[in-house]
Length: 331
Image (cartoon, rainbow, N blue to C red; front, side):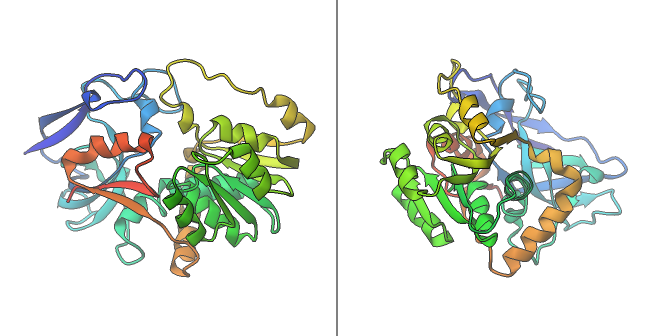
């Protein structure tokens, strides 16, 4: 069987462009014992993939030039040699950007179709939601009445962080890049939301957090993070999740040296990757599903239609095109 795939054509220098992607037709092998043939339904595009396009050493192996790009995918089993995954099963896994693919059934997780939209298992009930859950609740450990700041708050991770902090009884401040996103954060229950593109971010954060900042969930880095460091309270906690403001820079960014501020406030700063918590993922999915079912968590998706639009949806991440989770509907 032949299928269409999207491969990494070349490694980007600076911001990726459409030239980094190439469409190819591949021949799929016949199924072996335990394998399934999958039809792709939804593809996740995520900022961390930019790092994998580089050859630099990181926490996960880089994509190989000339090979299909891979990431979170929801797919349907259309042929099966796996007793655990009969035809018609809906699964989620780390799969190539292909219209069809062959995978070992043990590498996939079967997902329920009655708890939430299946695409949510790439967002609220998947890697972004779990990133928010463990980063906030395990690293920041917010307490009722504390002030929590979330950068990139209208993204797939940030919007969940803010809502989880509200469930914990916190005052929540989010930053985002448009007035529309700011309005949406207010709808989600954020106490304050700031458009960092139009506001003086240091002044706006200081006004929004008159009692200082106890927890900071950092998705962005850059000037927003610099401003938060000036507001840290004693024993503040920072979950370092992402630095999207620097992902496409070709030179080392120059900024403040924050160590003195962290020292004086006895602040805990911890970087983390959601895979650090892999054994605890079932716990996180169960709790997020429970809160979603109770109406305590809302989620937004920016859905692009068409397999051929996957590269454009990915590139749009770095222009701020998405609110919530960026998803491509392939089916």
